[in-house]
Length: 82
Image (cartoon, rainbow, N blue to C red; front, side):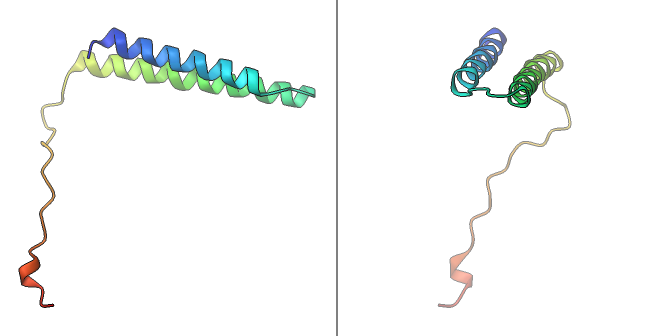
């Protein structure tokens, strides 16, 4: 999958989530407004880091010492008496 599509998907999710929270949340007081702004800030930071580390990981490529995943061993049911 091209890197630009992954980054675009992250940005679209961020914008849609922010729009949804903004439309769903009705701020009544200054504290509610502050909490809404703080949530928007945290969401922005999360998705920005998501894109950053995705790009960083794609630039470095796979690590050399990563072991391939093995299939889990199937239990030997014949070894257990019924």
